[in-house]
Each structure stands twice: as C-alpha cells, then as structure tokens.
Image (cartoon, rainbow over all chains, first blue to last red; front, side, top):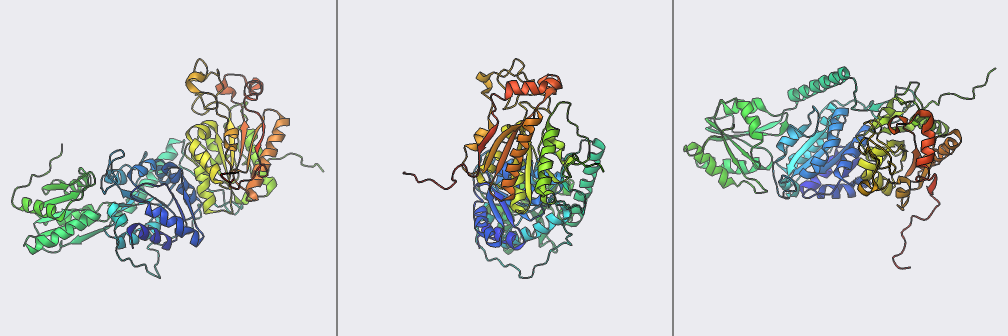
Length: 357
Length: 257
C-alpha cells in the first residue's frame, strides 16, 4: 500500500468518521483517499477553504464527540496553529498528520525534518503540548495512526503523526488487524456538545478563562496531563544497544532507515555501532538515549534539518558524551554512504564535535 | 389565577449579561432563545460563540455551546454539523468576527450549503476591543482607528454581508433585520424563525443579519442609539429578505442557453 493510503485506511479502521483538510503537496493522497473512503462508511469529508478553516472544523467535530483527522504539510500546519492551540486549550482529541516538506517559507516539496521544533516545542501560542509520533515505515505509520486515535481520546489532547514525503509516497505491505482493541481504557465522551436534554448541565467547549486564578489552575491541570504523557507514552526502538559499541546513532523517521542500512554495512566492516530511534518525539526518550549513550564513546545525530532533535539529545546527555552531527537540508536525503563515512570519521578522529553557543 | 404571558425562554440561561446599557445583544439573544423554544429543538441545539462582545454567549444560553476562535465560527459549525447532522447548529457572530477576520469562513460555509444557521450581529464597530473601525463602520463614522471618521478613499465602503452572501447560489435563506424598536424586533424574530426552520427542515445554509446598537463605542447616549441606527445605518443596510429557498433554482444552468 502507498503510505498516504495506508494512513487514511488506518484512520478509518480506527473509527475515524470525519476528515477536514486543504490540498498541499506532498500529502494530497491522504485527503484524496478520505474523500472517496469516508462516504462509504457514513462519514464525511470536507475540502476546507484553508488550513485555518480545516483546523477549526476538526475543532468543531471533535467537540461533538466524533473521531476526526486532518493532514497537511509544513506551511499548512503553520496555518493550523490557531486551531491546534484551541484544541489543546479545550482538551479535544484529534489526529493531525504532518508530512513535512523543506522550508522555511514556501521552501520546497521534498522531504525534511525541519518542523521538529514546531511539532515538539512550539506548535502555536500558549503553554501546551501535543503527542508527536514519528513512523519509519508504512506499517508503523498505519499502527501509529490507530494508536494516535486512542491516545488522543484517552488524554483528550491532539496527537500529531510526523512524517515526511517518503512515508507518504513509499509503497510497502501493510497488515490491519481484524480484532484490534484500543490501547487505552476509553471512557464515554460525556463532555461533548451533543445537545442537552436536561439530564446533565450544558456542555461548553471552551478555552477562555478571564479569571487568572482559574486559568492558572487550568494550566496546572494541563501540565499534570503532559507529565502523565511523559511518564507513560515514551516510545523508541533500539538496535544493538544490548551489546558493546563505540558509536551510538540517534535518528528518527525515514532517516533512521537510512542509518539502519548504514549500520548493517558498518557492522560487516567490523565497526561497533548501535542506534536509538525515538518514535515518540514528545515525549522524547531522554532516558533511553542517555543510557545507551553512556555505553558509547561518542554519539552521532542524523537529521534532515539544521539541527533540531540534537538539542534534545544534548539535554539527555548533559555533556557526558561528545555529540557529532550529520545532516542534509532543502529536501536532500542523507545517504547510507554519508552515514558510513561520518561514523568512520568519528572513529578515526577526523570528525569535529558539535559545539553550540 | 394569574396567567403567565411573559417569561424567560427555557433556552435562555437565568443569568445577568455583561452587555452595556442600550446594547441590543440581549434582545437578539432572547429572540434566538424564543425561536429555539418555539421550534422545540433546545435539546438538540449546539451554539457557537464568537470572539467579540458576545464571546460569553455560552453563559447566556441554556444549550450546549462551543467557543470558536476569532472569525472561525462557521468552520466550527461545519465540523459539528458534519459530525452530528441530527443537531441544530447555530453560530452567533459580530461584524469584526464575521465580516473581517472570518470572511473566508462565512463565504465558504454558506457556499457549501452547510445546514447551519448564522446570526450575524452588525453594530458597525469593534465593541469588545474598544471601538476600532469595522468593515461595517459607516462612511464618516468616528472610530478609535479612524478618528476623523471612516475615509472611504482609504478604507473603502462598508460591506453589506446579507447582499454579499445572497449573491451565492447555494444558501437557502438570507435576510437582514433590526431590533431597535419592538415592532421591527417582531420582524427580526420572524426572520430568525424562517432561518432556523430552513435548518430544521434540512434545506440549507441560512443567515440573518441583525443591526444592533453600540452606544458605548458610538459615543452616543443609550436612548439616542436607536435613533442613530435608524438615521445612519438603516438607509445603507436595508431590512428585508434577500434570498429564499424558493427564490431561484440552485440547479446548474447550462453554459449556452
């Protein structure tokens, strides 16, 4: 299955009834698939007039208690910032797929990881977080989309699937389980605006708190929720961290696949290399990265950005190991050979450690 | 036994509002609540509050409510109605909200023919933020961001939303009303009834623009505000029905007749 279609079908299988989105390359196959698929299951697809509108449509639909999704790519996600902040503030569950493209500005349409900061640190105004999950294969994209709906409902919080054009365009076999069970114990959405027959007080979906004391309490409650997410939802994959190794690679998404290919070749050449692949970017697997890094002599971070996730790796290591960096930008991918050359350079003492500030 | 001839509508919450003396938001709230009661749809109604003076509308109605960001109420309404077509969904918006920042959302919501109702309150000024120029501010009208009066050479002429929306083929019912005296308020209520009825019957998108007073930011005493509206706004914003479900086929027309 093509990645975009797998993402769409996974959402439908997870009970997604509604999709609101605006066309933007390179993710158009997702809305195209949903426009055909959702009417078949009695759901609805709306091509919104803008990403701003789409983000507010999912805000409405989520408030009415239905499972809803949107997808976009970097510049479109910037436009969705408004709706995402309101969704977080009003504690509504939605799934947002961001198939990142290179920026800034209009940038290009080829793969990038330049929106790591945006996704994990600053999606919009206000003090909030969204869960961010980064798949490295089509099967994992499909699985994470389904989990994302459960996580969104459980925490009443937006969940973002962060991929790139490769995830959207690649074709790989995908299996959907016939008897998939929710990964969380989900409660009925008694808070939804579904009409008030008098059996409960009126439900109000809102993020406005004019009383600062009340707003602070709201902020404290949100922070406690994000702390629970940090405690319970860290996801990562490891390769070779059980054994002895000299270099630890940290990479996520499709870049980690490139690194995986490189690691196979490096091992054949007798180089001892391991990898930690963060799957949840928020919450970031600080402990896993630190524990693995302490077994290595040096850490290599590989990204399709000027260096964004590397800041979380630095936080994890607190200066305990030297960090090296390999990246490409502008839509150009890192090749396995570049990773191999960089690892060899580190081992041979020919690579400069990254220094910040 | 005394007979109750006037009571608070069930759909209107039993609270005091924060509206200024002489503002007609309260009247419009009441008319909307009366229509919700009279159509018997309160238990399945969801309202959408805007950003503006009526931002706290969710406290004033006794129905489920959803607070929208500035101008996006029609998009939020779209989301709710598509999720739950059995609900009666109405958005309550002011002129800065609908006619400025939310122009794209209202036009496309109307043009898609979302089966929702929009109550558009036009008082020719930004109220909550303190009297700045609105897209509906009258030529020459003083506002804090046009202190010598609206200059049409720089800011253009006020936007007539009811007329604009009625140029679209899809919407079912578009009207303008005013509530500055009891007689015209009866007409406004009738417009609201027809708009909500369109939705209840599943016809299509409906919008009622209602002219409203803002003595605080117009800088006129409350008792003179109704006269100001009549003198300055009514000639430019004529009251009436601009589009009805029967007022023309929405079927495509052939390219060549």
